[in-house]
Image (cartoon, rainbow, N blue to C red; front, side):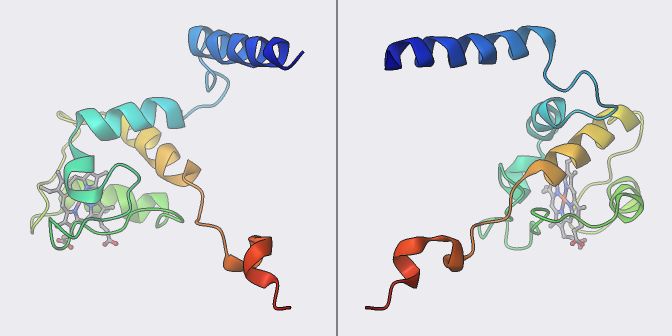
Length: 121
Ligand code: HEC
């Protein structure tokens, strides 16, 4: 019985991989994750945009990213510790996908949502 369920859900996953889960949306978090990796953002900001102690100030990008306009202006125009990514290197579509990926990263759970940490008896 439970193996049927496992079989069914992996079929759904396989189908969404084949047909593109985010195809209905303009920007795709799925593609954005790939672009985040292939453009090396993760090397300084961590795979989940969590920032990195190793790159000392590869800032936290997610959860809850800055407004898209600010984000785009920074990525295109920065000339400090982060190299600028001009449109010739990183297309607008890829940048929008990256932003969708950052938006899709869930915030960590509050301790209040973890029942065991709310039991004081
Ligand atoms: C070589 C390391 C490096 C890479 C690669 C890199 N960043 Fe950064 N990024 C930084 C550093 C360091 C800062 C903070 C520097 C500053 O304020 O000038 C930063 C800042 C940012 C900020 C502003 C954050 C804030 O709160 O002010 C954004 C947005 C950002 N990066 C996005 C990206 C994206 C998207 C990519 C990939 C396309 C990327 N970064 C690739 C090092 C990097």
